[in-house]
Length: 321
Ligand code: AKB
Image (cartoon, rainbow, N blue to C red; front, side):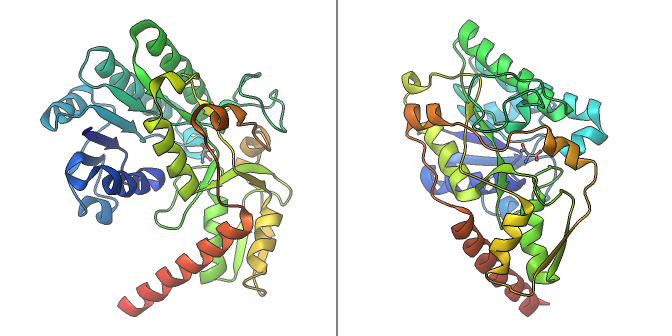
C-alpha cells in the first residue's frame, strides 16, 4: 500500500484530492500538509502536518517520518497573484518542485504528481484545439514556472528515471473550497454570488472563452494518471487535458436557467490580458489514448451540481448562525 503526502492540501484542488485519496487508500495512508491551518475540515479529518513546501529539510523530515513513497505537490502561486509577487511565485513554484524531484532522484520517494496548467501557453499558441506539442511562450510568471517545471520533470524522468506525472489543468470549478489567485476564479465566484447577491460583476469580458473543468473530473483525471501503468505514460512533461470551454456570458446564461433574476455585469481588470493570452480550447487526444481519460460534466450538469450544492451549503450555514 502506498503512503501518500499531499503538499498544499488545504487549497481548492488539494483538499478534494485529500478526501478522494483517503477514500481510496485509507485515512492512515494519506498525510495532508499545508503552510497553515486554513482548512479545518482537512486539518481535522486525518493526519495533518504544517509544512513549508520551500523548506527542503522540513519536507524530507516529513517524508521520512511517515515513510512516504508518493507525493502530490499541489502548493503553487497562481496566475493573478503571481503577477503581483513575481519573485515569490518563482521561489515557491520552482523550489518546491526541485525539492520533490531531488527527493525522488535520491531514492526517498518513488512517485510524484505535479500539476501543470494551460498557463504554459501564450499569445503565439494556436488558440482553438491547442495541440499537445505547439508554440509555448507564456507571458505570466506562473505560466513561465509551469513551462520550466514541465521541462525539469521531463529531464528528471529521462536522466534519473524519476516517475513524475503531470497534467495541464484548465480552470477548475468546485463548491467545497474556494480557489485563490487565479484568472479562472470568476467561474467559481459567479455561482456563489448568484446565490448570495443575485448579481456578479465579472473581471473578464463577456466573450472571453477559456478551457474549464468540474472538480470531480479533475480529481478523476489526477487519480487515473497516477494509477496508470508507467509504460502507458508517454508524456513526462505534462498532458493536455480538456472538458468544456465557455465564456462568462455562457456560464451566466446557464445560471439564469435556474435563477432567472440573476444579473451579470462586466468590469475587466488586469486578468483580462492573462485570459486573452491563453487558449480557448484544448486537444487532449493523447491523455484519452494513453490512460483512457474521459470527462463527465458539461456546462449544464456542472451548473446544476454547483447550484444545488452551494444552496445546501448556504442554507446550513444560515441555520448555524
Ligand atoms: C489560474 O487561473 O491561474 C489557474 C490555472 C488555469 O492554472 N486556475
